[in-house]
Length: 599
Ligand SMILES: NC(=O)C1=CN([C@@H]2O[C@H](COP(=O)(O)OP(=O)(O)OC[C@H]3O[C@@H](n4cnc5c(N)ncnc54)[C@H](O)[C@@H]3O)[C@@H](O)[C@H]2O)C=CC1
Ligand SMILES: CC(=O)C(=O)O
Ligand SMILES: [Mg+2]
Image: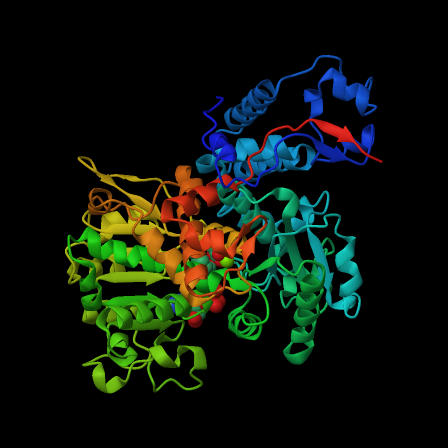
């Protein structure tokens, strides 16, 4: 049903730079009907049909936006009814298709239904269905979205970037398809991830969809199945490596910077070695961040602090929590780095002391200094076997959990079911009154355990979070609350806050401010019920707060330069509340504008 326009009022607020009113269009007739940005389908008023040469190209009756919206939702509900009982994959892909068709046809209507029904539609345009879409991308492909730069475009990118039709781009999400969720190397098919993340940017942060750009850097794939698939749409060659690889990314970053010097580039789903390397290589040169390392770390830290509060303990007790992280990839190491920094800050002490409470496990078991070929990024978190009292290099998850009795067991391994019954049962012996289980891997099949498994084996008193959504669990006399610990709570605010601050770089402090803001979002009462993160229904509100925190940090760190009419001086003089309103007022909201033809 039609819903209240939650943020429409904010457009007129004092810091709003949104430009209501007419929208210029440089085309006429069928060209407009085939352009999803301008197309209003049956919604074009008669005067506009006359002005734009549309008369006779549409059925005569003019349908209101509200009516179009209801019609779409009715067809969506019919699809739900008609696919009841069919295989989950079939149902999910059918839902994705109907939304994608609307996206291809009428962007304003698409984004409005997405924003109004974000809780229901996020699992379709984002995790978990987006994973299925990527896996089946070549077969699902009907029309392109975003840009594709391949290994074959070397030397051409500076001019190719001008093929993109928009003169202004604020937000780019870039992948090379090498680690798509927990699904591995999907080559060019990974483009679904930048598309899904940018849909979340529009829905959660109100980034104008005409100013977003999903990008695939296709440097080949090492996925044998795809290389042999006759339908595969990417470059059929093994992935570029070393300097050859970096020269492609370098060229792309220079091309972007040349055309849109202020665009923010979010690196997404790069395999670990390139995730860390590119972050180090570009963060001082361009306005960029790595969502899997930094966004995930912030969301996890907010959740870890939440678990301390859920035990009714002061935040300073974070220093006493024993935390086992399963997965030593870009996400797991990012989380550990941020958590260790938080502990160091809280204790005013050294990182060495902080490290003692964290345990890192990868596919070869517990990571210690005895590990042969220890990855340099994991070195700071490797345990000295002398400090382990009974545990040895390569100890299994169950051995570690039984010995350490952790307060938190956090999975970012990409391996479904790795928190098996035995491991979950061992969490009953946790030192915590409310043991926390974070099964953060995506999509759902890759979650370390399901919500039901966690509550039934580890006990009803646990706090549970997962990367992809699960339903709350009925525990008879109470509800086992399921939190979605996903970087979607932070990346929209990091991107929007950076954009509105005019910062040239995204610093650790800006990401920390985002995480702390999320950590303090929930009330004590909610947290004590095990609710660590807000409902996705209020994601725009969360993003407004997070964005404001990022702006505050950018100003404090002297990174901010201002945005549009709002200069550094105005930003510096804004109260916290003013900053939140400034962010809110700059969120794009989908509504039809009158179209005016201009040659
Ligand atoms: N919830 C969220 O917001 C986010 C979730 N993720 C998820 O985290 C997962 C991992 O992502 P990355 O760190 O980038 O991947 P990665 O491939 O860089 O790292 C995976 C790590 O898991 C370890 N591992 C593999 N099998 C294991 C096993 N059986 N037991 C213990 N450890 C094992 C590997 O050794 C490696 O250290 C993915 O499923 C991804 O979707 C990633 C970012 C954000
Ligand atoms: C959520 C996300 O960024 C991932 O699973 O990679
Ligand atoms: Mg990711």
